[in-house]
Image (cartoon, rainbow, N blue to C red; front, top):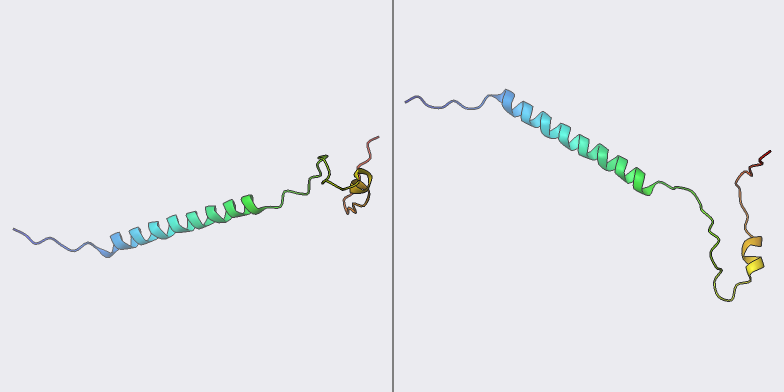
Length: 73
């Protein structure tokens, strides 16, 4: 019987490279998922009912916005 030889270093290098690539891919996907989930999607105003005890006219009159107004011709 012949003794078995040890695995060559090229096999370990390939396995190491594959593991690093998988981890980098997972890190990139995690970063993209984080940006997608935490991205500020904008301020939306709703026309819901004001809180109890709040005047309806004053609820919408004192809102200061820095948004540009759109004019339709």
